[in-house]
Length: 302
Image 1 (tube, rainbow, N blue to C red):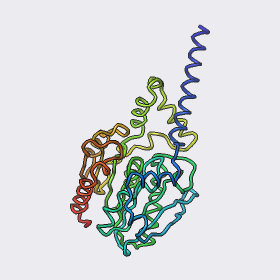
Image 2 (cartoon, rainbow, N blue to C red):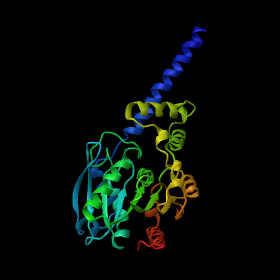
Image 3 (cartoon, one colour):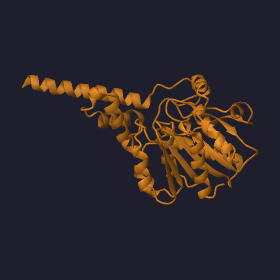
Image 4 (cartoon, rainbow, N blue to C red):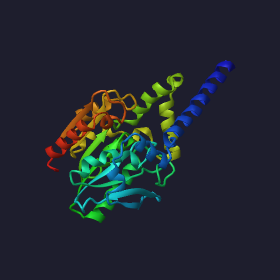
């Protein structure tokens, strides 16, 4: 009996320790150095020279409501009254958003790109998969309206974690006129279950997800259940273009299909043939631009 009790206690300890470790991985991802992200994007040929070196731009630091500053760049594009705000993916920086800028610059948009909290040159000590980031995005929208004017047409584009963030954000701010979600997730609990199965095969039978969620709630103030765009998607009237790579196994492609099926109002979806995670644009830039152009024309933005 004592041996059984000791075994149970040992298993519980293992579950608690591993769940705390998993929680730490979630909130403290290994973030790439800011300059390294620029080098990687340049080496991949993802940033057009005129965007980096010729466009008028202003480096900005926007005060977050959480006490740190959000670093970014604003490209006024002849003082346009149409502005697109980009939200990049996890572990990266605003330079990951630059590859999409040409599509919008050519169509008369001003652009705001920024580093998420705990990324790039922004402040903040942890990552929350959109729970806190959505409020930072609202702060960026407030900054744009203060800068450009209340009549500004604002759209948002998010890649990966940025996609999850923009979906959470538009559910609380009707000022946004359109949204492009590129390979965002529908629910972090399901996402982490998928990642756990793929990345930690030996641990997949342990109750890590609920325990890690509790640990995150205690230490950071949010649980995995709090980050679930699919719970609010049916109430969102903002037009959304869902984009996902057909072969994405990091954030399963099914998540965009699920979100699309529940979205009310205007919506469109583009599944990029053969594309992996966050590769829908680089796998076929011309088709990506064509789909975005059609979406913007369908909702009378251009």
